[in-house]
Length: 221
Image (cartoon, rainbow, N blue to C red; front, side, top):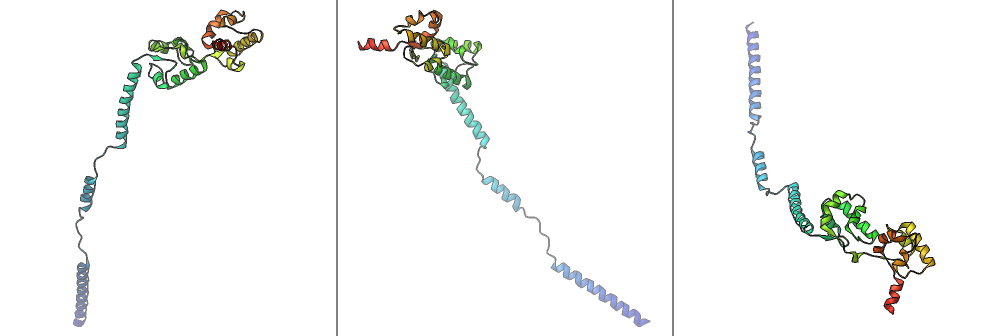
């Protein structure tokens, strides 16, 4: 009986000693936890501090836009300060007028080219999209030089050239062609005396027509 108890105590001692040895080895091999270094925060702060200050692209664009707007405003102010001649004005000068944007400026120039030039400012009302309100706003800022008008030779220009003019058209070109088939045109008054034409049409046409053949003969003589 006594031997059995001693055997049990010996086994218990062995177990306890084994646990102790195992715990000691584990504690010895365990790497102590280190505090998290602050290198992340410090390195990030150092990196951010090293970046030179700069303006964002949007700010640069806004700055450039404001600068260009100011310069454009000065140009517009200079252009709108005087009266412009319609037959020589470019798109920038036309856009400087009140209520005239890029679209209307292009239409004015296109119509001027087809017409051959303006003989009076009121012809701007014939431009599509330019109403009486816009014309009233710009009337005092425009003038015309009739000497800049490009004319057609009423006695020698082709029917096709005559019909393309907005004031003459197909019917007017036919009237002119029929008259000069039967008569020689010496002066514009001869054409105005033709009953189908008359003074009303001639008043509209006269700034854009001239007699070319006999004028050349007069110069040669």
